[in-house]
Image 1 (tube, rainbow, N blue to C red):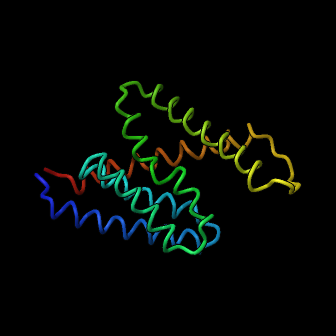
Image 2: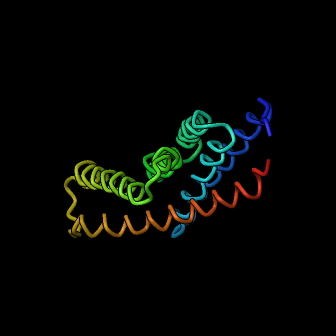
Length: 169
């Protein structure tokens, strides 16, 4: 089914509103913040499926800007801005590769690089002058990589469900 311009604009507005609401919930509901950020990332995926990568990028940029304007706890938006918001776009490009093993390896390398940068930035900027207990970075990265694989699997399942349920042509 061919999607017209009005449909794409309306869908973008709805996805943007839902993404910002999810980010807002993530900053105010303790203990499930990463779950809300994961939910907010679904709307970028929907835009990619319906309008292409350009629509997903536009939604990500608009959600970041609106989140920074509307949500009081700016630091709480870091997971969305630096990972969840654009992971659907990264996933889209990585999954163009036919080999499943290469896909997984690239996703893990991407995540490990982000985690290393995040750990270094945290220690240099936010924790400068504060003594924190030392946790081996490798353990943090390995735990995060495991969670990435779970998140990616669930996201793939939701994408397949969306395609079957809403994209029937």
